[in-house]
Image (cartoon, rainbow, N blue to C red):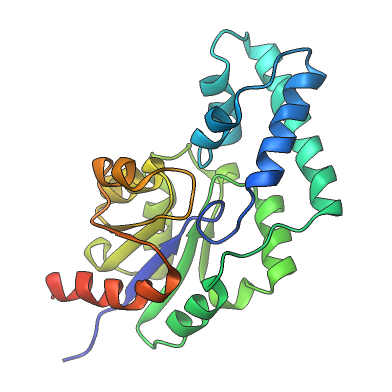
Length: 225
């Protein structure tokens, strides 16, 4: 019996890439440029994964649309400037895990991220990741997580069935998105949301290192065989 196509979709910030320093610094700079007190660090990190306009509204719901839009632009400029000077590293074990999964004939790797296409392309080029992914979904083209649009598009592009797909991420938004699209869900414990929050949001498993990913995927798929 042939093995069905397995769609494995990764979040980026907090899952594959450790961009914490960039995000906090850019958010601080964006609010300061607008003459506003920056959000506390923990609050900024709590909204990672949301599309940027949604994230700013979450951080500062008292702002009118114009000021919120200006902070969005300030953030983009600050993040781009910092990106030119400092690299965001891959988390330990990320590249080896991607290579091992991509070598599986049944595996199709994808990305679903709150980043822009420009931001994702930069990271893909920086870390030489493009060849590992067959579908990449970004905030430019979809509603913000946890809306399932990104994963629905990835399923259409690859022809995989939702029950044979897995969403891997570090935030509750990733887990809720995966559940909404009918995918299995794996949380990672090294990102921006704690393991208990991931579990509450629907993570079926939470791993503590990329070394655990392959066996965890096999366990989930045996359950849906």
